[in-house]
Amino acid sequence: MGLIAEAQKETSGPQCPAMFTAVYDKYRRLKFVQRDNGESLVLYPREQLSWQDLVAYKAITGDSISLLEADLIMGIDAIFEGREDG
Picture (tube, rainbow, N blue to C red):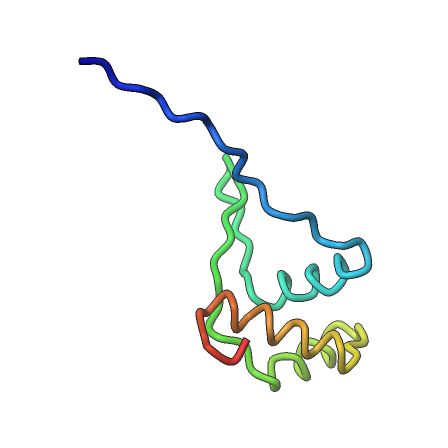
C-alpha cells in the first residue's frame, strides 16, 4: 500500500497594502527586540503593548503616531496576543 502525497498549497498570506507598511514598521519596532546572533537576526516579542508604550515611543523617536495608526497598532497587537478586543 502506497502513500499518496497531498498537493502542496501555497502558504503565503495576503500582501500588506503599501499605505500601511509604515504602520506595520512602527508596530514591529515597538513589539520586537532584535538580536543579531552572528548567523541570523532573531526577533523576541515584548509584553502586550499599552497606550503608554505608544506615548514613550513617540517621545523617544520623535515619530508622529496618528489616531488611526495608534488604533491599527493596538489592533495588530491584540491579534498577535490572541485577545478578543482586536
